[in-house]
Image (tube, rainbow, N blue to C red; front, side):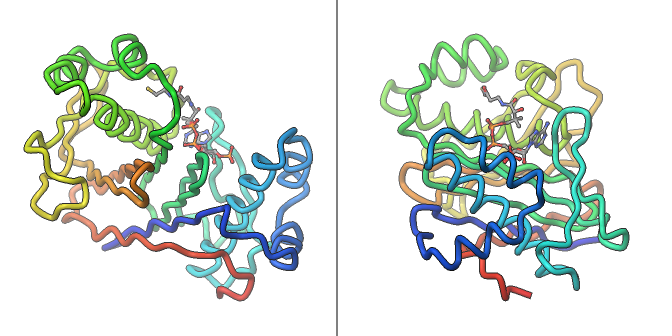
Length: 250
Ligand SMILES: CC(C)(COP(=O)(O)OP(=O)(O)OC[C@H]1O[C@@H](n2cnc3c(N)ncnc32)[C@H](O)[C@@H]1OP(=O)(O)O)[C@@H](O)C(=O)NCCC(=O)NCCS
C-alpha cells in the first residue's frame, strides 16, 4: 500500500514553447485531440492540451510506459480511469483545471480526488452555499466576518468537489449529504499548526475515519483541496510539486 500521494501542478500560461506544445499534441489520443479541436476558445484548448499532457507524462514517471501509450476509460459518471497497459491499472489519478492552474493527483490503489478553483471567479458564493452546502457548513460560513466568507466558501467548495471526485460520482450525489469541518483559528491553509479538515456524513454510507484531506494555496488566488481514501493506513505524505510536463520525464 502506498505511503504517499503526489500532487503535480502546472501554470498553463507559462507553457508557450511551440515545440513543446507540438510534442504534447503528439502524445494525446485521438479522442483527446478531438476534444481539443472542439474547444471554441484558445484558452480552453490550451488548458485541455496541457492538462492531458500533464496526466500522461506524470503517469509515465510511475511506470515503464511511454506517455502516448496510456489508455483510459471513463466510469459511468465521467471520471477518467486507467484501463491500460494492463499491468498499470492499480495506479489512480484525478485531474482538475481552472483559469491559470491545472493539478493532477496520483497514488497507487487509492481513491483520490483533487479540485482547484480560481477565487477571483464570480460565483455568488452565499447563494451557492445556501443551495448546495450542508446546513452546518452554511451556519459556519455565516458566523464568519463578511470579508472572510468568500475565501472560506472556496475552501468548502474545493473540499466537497475533491471528495465527490475521489468517490467518482458527480455532484448529483448531493453536496448537502456530507459536511466539512475546518480549523476555525484563522490560520493559513499551509500553516503546519492548522488541523486538517474532517468530514461527516448525513445519510451516506461512508466512514470519516478512512479519509484524509489536505488543502493548498499554490497562488494567492487559487484554492486547492485533495481527498484520499486511505482506509485504515496511517496518514499519507502528500507531496506537492510544480512541474512543466516534459516529454522526456521517464
Ligand atoms: C467533474 C465534476 C465533479 C467537477 O468538475 P469541475 O470542478 O467543474 O472541474 P475540474 O476541473 O475540477 O475537474 C474536471 C476533471 O475531472 C475529471 N472528472 C470528470 N468527471 C469526473 C467524476 N465524475 N469524478 C471524478 N473526476 C471526474 C475529468 O478528468 C475532468 O477533466 P477533463 O474534462 O479534462 O477530462 C463535475 O462533474 C461537476 O459536477 N461539476 C460541477 C461543478 C459545480 O457546479 N460545483 C458546485 C460546487 S458547490
